[in-house]
Length: 402
Image (cartoon, rainbow, N blue to C red; front, side, top):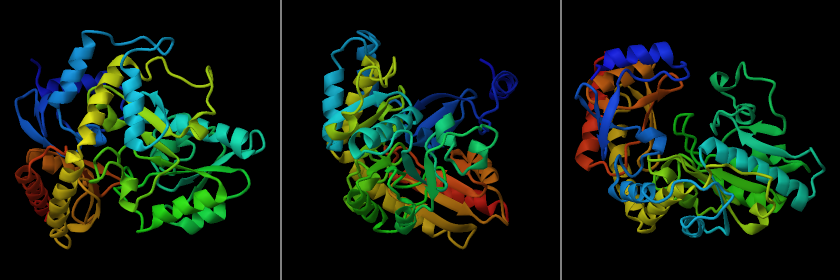
């Protein structure tokens, strides 16, 4: 087998450079640990950006996929299949919503929510044709399609990809008053991440989601919660909105819904919202395919017990308590909820990239964002011992730059 350096050389020559990966080539994984082609083991503290909440090779999820692979993988939505009813009913029960519209990737689910909100605005709210607007937040990350980058404030995601799609108003994240001021007769929805992941695991002020929910209800505007990264157990609750007892009009789900096995995403909403979509108006050949639904059904079953939510909450307290001890000792601040943390490194010591590389050398895989922030999101199956060991490696990595 080729070595890591040999494979990386091929990749750098033959693959578009749309990512800047750490120099590791993973070949096997189980639970919270991965192994590279050279036989080195690493603790995965990124979890595929929360796609692997339930760990690599989760037995229930893999078994569900293997059973379905041997039976039926695709029909397209031209026909029904025997996994679809359970998926829609199960995810509907989990979210408390009447209807499910399945897609594949998170970005597709966000695009779906945008289309549904606009159509709802025209057909239900009575907004004039072509005038609908959606309020979004600064520093958001909802994907990288042309429409989505049109309302990004990240130059890397946005610059050079115009002309941009109109119909969005960008306001300050965490400010209900900013949302209130942006609302007009053409506003159909507010699209928000309950916790902004790509921005550095930013948690809004207490009460923000509650007030946003109340404002959207009062103004007859849809509240759309992008729970692609924050949902499905990551923050210690099924959804991050649950921390404030908030139920949005639409959930946008992805990543962990596919268990780290296949891409699965969905929009969940009640019939008075999703019912505006009629045959031919939206779809996907692979959206809601039998394999995806079988995997999604296994994920939903795992979440029904509440075990993973409770574990993420308990281990999250351990993680954040230990990380807070590093503040003032190479760490500027720590943010997050549950098993999700953004750690701001003192920029006078090192960049986030440098710390990520130092962590990799110590057997821990994490990733930087926006220069000096390290994101930590280990699989929820991680042991407490391994979790504390990972933070010890972070402390040692930071100390190495002094």
